[in-house]
Length: 494
Image 1 (tube, helix red, strand yellow):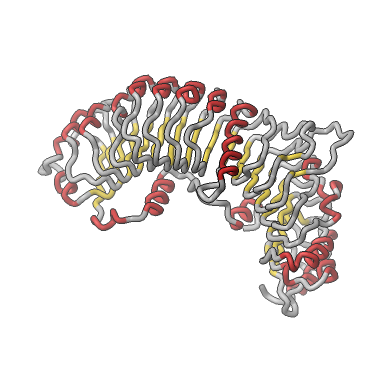
Image 2 (tube, rainbow, N blue to C red):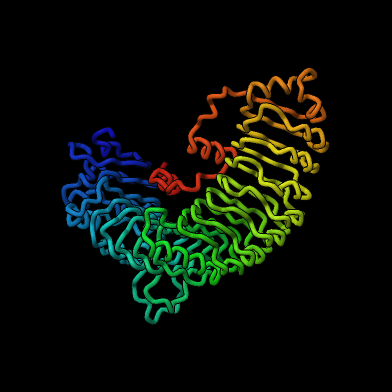
């Protein structure tokens, strides 16, 4: 950060200002700058006293729309000074987005309790303010649309303000809500009688074992992430109860993602009421052994199913046959799932299947009547019965350990595209045009691509494989936590 930036009197945009104790790097440099747009003030632990903070004159910067404040340490020993500094950093009342992270104080400033100052806020991000026990009256902000709260161990309610005599709904404009690493959070409001979240459409809850979710009539997307293998038994039970609440209170949900429920052995039967669910994704269910027949039968609108890293899962129930609208199925890192139910022949809408990091293709897949696209990653073999899937039009084999192709490939008369990426050199030789031993089995395929790979490449780690799979499927890694860079990007500061 160059010194004496305050000398640039005509400067109107400054996305990042880093406070330092060196001369020319203090907050007073911002005093006379008529800044607008976005501003991230970083290094607030270097501010000596509230007088320096007041010199920034933030409240006078009426064109400022996004403000993000961050400390590089949440050391509680700096808390009292940080409280005074934050009090002096009052922003203009027309601010649209506000965020802060690693604030070391316990109490929030008076201006954060004043809804008239915060009334224009559309987005709020509060991250790793570890010593805070109470949050601003966020439920009373009329225009708040996006809220992210993370890393506060003592917060029990997102808004514990009084609603006596208030007829208005709480969080009346909130559409996107993320709650993460809040071990003692019990609910959105202390007063459960208040109607809340009437238009919430997207919710992510990660490591919040004690929360009681209210009725959410407009919710369409929910991602629930458990506390993982390091959690105690009570936390695990708490997160499981959240899944039960989804079935009871959110029956219009269209997308449900379940991640890191390491102690969950079966999906709760309450999920069977999700008759509007179109997409179900399950990641990291280390103890998940089965799907209840009743749960599956109730998911009559399901179009996409992903099962990822469920290492004890042995089978899917016969009730799968009721998923007549299912179009896409992904099974990844489920080594014990070697057979599929006979009812797979009833999945008349299933067009695409992806099998990744399984020893072989699960028996029963050949009975899907209208399968058109099959992707296979990191498998040890391809069964001869693959040639029975005569409806297949596209086949992708990536890092499949084959030295020859099944002779039944010649039966895939509708196959229009075959891609073999990372094949053994012997297979490459056998697929040589006209002269290769396997050529006659694939000669009828209009588009054929074969990419050889050195044998030692197969020694990649599981993380490498996961990364490759997710890149190929153009979806985020399911276990990756949101980083501060991600938040700043959402906030518009990167």
